[in-house]
Amino acid sequence: MVSRELMDKSFEAIEIAKSSGKIKKGTNEVTKSIERQTAKLVVYAKDVSPPEVVMHLPLLGKEKKVPVIEVSSKEELGVAAGIGISTASVAIVKTGKAKKLIKEIATELSKEDGK
Image (cartoon, rainbow, N blue to C red; front, side, top):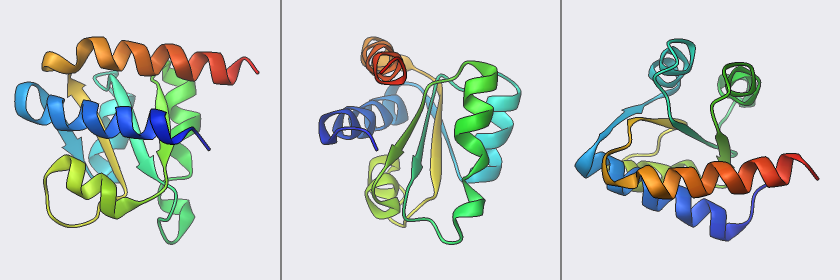
């Protein structure tokens, strides 16, 4: 599990990208964007039931070299994505003004992977 600070940064990146770039919502769309290598950052919720719905995202992200973050709640993820309902996962496909923030998140994630 990543730090709360990193989670908040990822929510912020989604909010910025939503208004200035482009995001994909829902696990099917997110999976496609990773496979097509259009995803710049993938965020998925830990509280998804059944967990098998999002289980493949970290592995696929690693394989395609896309940073993937697990956050604690699908409700928070839905709010960040601006859809008013919970969502299992979100991918940022066009960074817009969130480019620098996404780079920071990716750097922090790679540090945590190195531990």
